[in-house]
Image 1 (cartoon, helix red, strand yellow):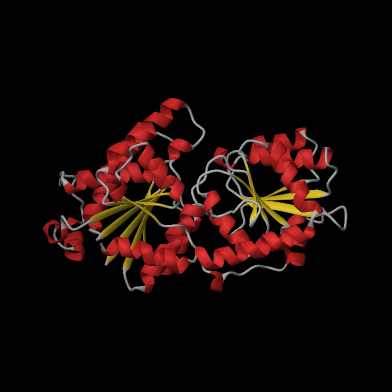
Image 2 (tube, rainbow, N blue to C red; image 1 turned 45 degrees about the vertical axis):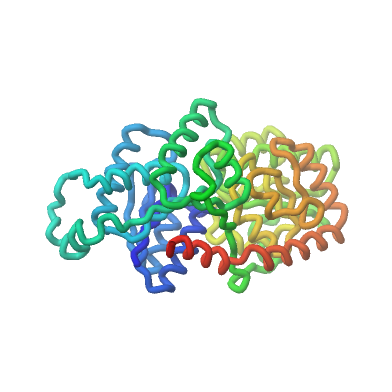
Length: 405
């Protein structure tokens, strides 16, 4: 079987880890794996796929922001790619790739004529004639949290919601990573219930590898600890508006200035919001309390350096960061958005707070900072839950069952 995965961006993140995990499992089944990635072609996911022996196809016109000209070109690029490699399964990931990839699927199935390739004869010899496999392709889509739930102008929310509805009819199945996203899809009439299936993300605890606390703290904190009893909180996140990092920074300010807590926060990640976040940290006088490490490959290895894992997102799907933090035995404080309540049981495996509320975040930070026995309890119950409920094996088995249908 030949599978083509399509995703908008290849930088290290939850959706990219999801694609890598499925691609690796597919290769383990001796299936052929191709991947098409937009934006920068030299990225984490492209390197991972090449290492697996998969074929990589850059889509230079596929961009995360709305761009009518680039979006139209991407539709035809993808349609050409579908006709060229003729995959049995096309699996789209992220909203932009999901919408444009579906329209490209329709164009390709209608057999529109495209400019002939100079190597057309070689392509036919390699992949077979158009007639050999036309009509057998299946189109699947994983919604890693609906984009219209992100903070954006109302007209953009309406546009994305409309495009999701229109293109849902082209897809054979839509995978939702949480019960929440499935419910949102039904409430917004994106698709009928029979087209939707919930498959939670999962991780492989057998392969979980964490560096020891002492060495990771020395590396990440850059000798920034000012007290022996310093509490280290941390998160791993790309610097996107959806991650709500400005609220985490404000919560650290409250913890330090109002509660007088010996807090150091580590934020592992990178992105376009770095200048704004750096300015907020400087204006708040928190340079000694917050460290922006930049992007770190396989950042989850450093989780043991945290005493408390914090997620301040305003929109999420089913974040791998929380699963990884639980597998590291960390207590968690997170915003109550998306599928997170399906991962974190409030006051049992961690604390849930409402989004965009730094005061609530700071209050829970203080509770856990003052109670090491509660940190240990939350860490233990979280580890048990991730072992029992969110295995990578279960995620792969359910996803491949969808392919088989």
